[in-house]
Image (cartoon, rainbow, N blue to C red; front, side, top):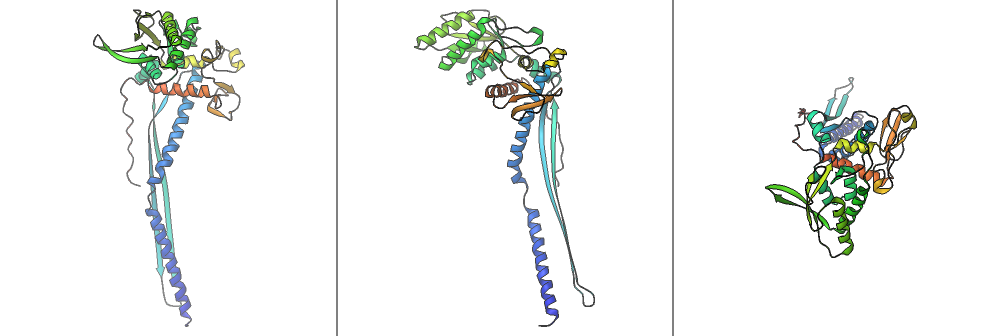
Length: 365
């Protein structure tokens, strides 16, 4: 073999390796990065938005407790743009001795992730419409028809039923519940569990009216409970259909007048039972915690605790005034009612949504 042949063989081997690397990089650059990102981004953004929504709700309840103004900031849109650029360069040169052969290879790659998130503060007319307008009785009764316990729905969302008042923790008109209110909730829950109560819509005077219907059952206990509800509410005992209206008092013995709360009133009532540092009460920074009237439906609906440090096992936690306010992840009842409250807030949109901010992004890399 001639002396020049090993060098020529080595050059060819190196050239083939360089070509293989180039092809590998080119194929890698051509692979799509979009499809694999769908599952990852969908779940990551869902988790992030859900966590921020819980923390925002909890923070606003705490702020109301301290007399601070609640602020709601909605995530109007999330746009994520990806781009990946690959640049390759190569140089090969051969020459006769004594000049040495030269080979050169270079490459560059750039990956860009551009998330664009827009926020819309809840202010003005939308604030008044969503947070200060009382929830429609039809919405309240639809929740009951959908399977939510009627005692919990009425305890959180209703001021009074036919003049029988629920307790309220708002500082402006704080008061205890009428004695018959909890008895009414107990009886209604018993009837709901048997399926003896239902809702239907009927045309009355050319208008759609919501009716609560007490179904007839061959059960002496259910019948007695139904009669007890009629007596408490002052309804006709021989009637089976009652029109549900908004108001403090019924006009006839065939009406159930439901005075509902707004979201702000609901948050104010919940905030009254938040545990706060004793020194904050002593310094007049916050009023004393409202003591519950008993256990169960008479007790604290959503138990919000405080601690000096970030709790380790929290369903939701927010820092405020050098403290941490939180809901224990092991407190299932509080978690469930807190999630129910967030769900109710999504039902308060009574008007058309304003258009989201227009965002223009580049279609290129």
